[in-house]
Length: 300
Ligand SMILES: [Zn+2]
Image (spheres, rainbow, N blue to C red):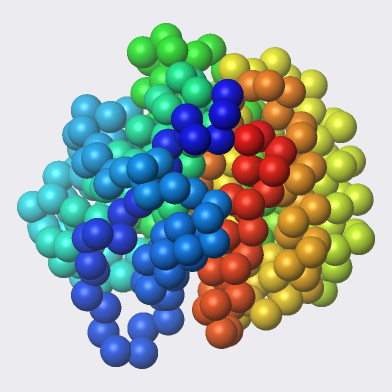
């Protein structure tokens, strides 16, 4: 289908207050939306506010005590701490919007072939708790929803963020109708990794060439029939990233995305942008924008 038919979802209309000097680059989401429009990659008509996720959808992936504890603000400081973001009504709304945006992107991808959330990829959230800037696990919520509603039978998750998706694997890692490939830094958080269906842990300072080799090899090892791909396109593999251990360049990331979008074999792809914490943050925004540019080049 033509690129103009693809829909994209954003969450940055809900502003989340963070204390000054907080490490999380909240501004990158708005910067990305501005950049993909300014560069003519995405037309404003294609961009939609993410809808709020339904509780019934959240509750397939998350425990009641966690969801209602967050909603009613009854979780303790200690329970909230691993998320790394301060609880606020805005954070709660933004988290509902982010999970809802990915659910919408999966629906849209099934209709048109491709869709993405300009946020998300919250792969560190577990059934009973958030972790690592992730409140709800968007991939788990959307995957269990699509399967339960019989919209798809089998889902391939490609998680190329530099951090292992321990929340994806804790919730989905043992399912036979889902296959998770995670390629991540062996020395990166999370330090206790939970097995995915295929984990590729690469050493510190991994460069473009070694990364692309590992990616091609991993993809060739997947023998799994699927109806849709969920792509976590984290760009924290970039050399300049402050939370990643790899040394990929912008060119290396473009090549990565080209391989992923070419791999899809005409099956729908729903994408979330994942992590990116470069200094300066413009590099992260450029890397995320490049992913959309490559999607347009290959899928448009
Ligand atoms: Zn990450």
